[in-house]
Length: 313
Ligand code: FAD
Ligand code: NAP
Image (tube, rainbow, N blue to C red; front, side):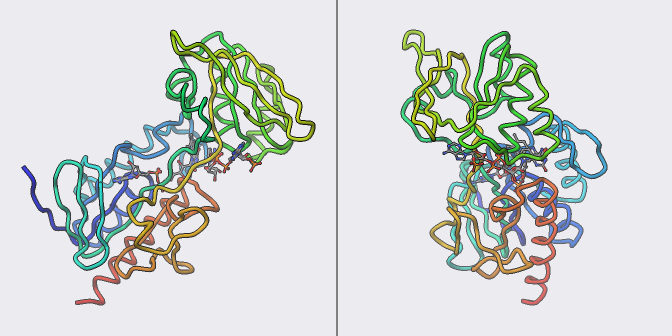
């Protein structure tokens, strides 16, 4: 049955930004409600070791996010398993509609919906998605035990995915359009030192090819961006790791965004172009996109929401 739930602060998203906002808003006695979305815990739930979260030399991403959830809950955050389908920021209280049928009204909103994997957008990538083409080595790597796979991209994600895949695959080819990686130097060194990984520089994916019955990948065709030379690389798995796009669909028509959909916030602030709506984490951060920076912004958003509501009294 549909119901309406009012909260002073509605936090949308359950990554590091959302849970940190929950901790701080709870401690400000705002009794926040946090809606988790379809990926409770956010992006770190699809990785393995996290080695740059202060206080842990190494922690598993999913474990870290369970700890954050427990912390937010213990602080007093009302955590709800729902996904916000639409959000109306044109008047206050703001109104959000959940997939469960619940309507959420809120005096302030913290947007912490993060980012989602980007795809190359080619037909053959789409055709084999879930049948050899993946954007998550942690989720699908184990299907490729003893087989050859390729990873597309040159950032931290691509390098980590390639390293992780060496646990299963016989060979990992990292295909990158330049000859320079964006990843942290320590990860780059691990990649270049790993005998199972072969980098293929200056190449872009042209197409994925394979069989129709059963649907499955047999290889990729790549093009050298300098010479135009086409090469076929036989493989059974293709991991696309070309970055993430901000999950700003709920607000893109309502507030100022830039750089392909990132929510604009005021300098040194999480305030958006709509008073009472704050944005934290990867939805607004095109630069750092780290768990710790997202958590920091979640803290800022909760403190700013508290001040905004207090000023209204
Ligand atoms: P996210 O973690 O993206 O979470 C977004 C949340 O919003 C999710 O819970 C989702 O369910 C929710 N949501 C989305 N839309 C809706 C909606 N309509 N309604 C309700 N909820 C919604 N960073 C590091 O610092 N160290 C690392 O080692 C590291 N490893 C990484 C490995 C991988 C494979 C990836 C992909 C990223 C990694 N990162 C790492 C980056 C880090 O995960 C992100 O910077 C961080 O998770 C961003 O946090 P966030 O809270 O902004 O959003
Ligand atoms: P990213 O840093 O944006 O890197 C994306 C990579 O994909 C780049 O190398 C880019 O090439 C390539 N690329 C983009 N579009 C392409 C296309 N159309 N065709 C071919 N190649 C394409 O993304 P990310 O690696 O997912 O990282 C996202 C954020 O999360 C970063 O801030 C990263 O630091 C963070 N993260 C951190 C960790 C960690 O700390 N251990 C782990 C994972 C992610 P160019 O280089 O040529 O642009």
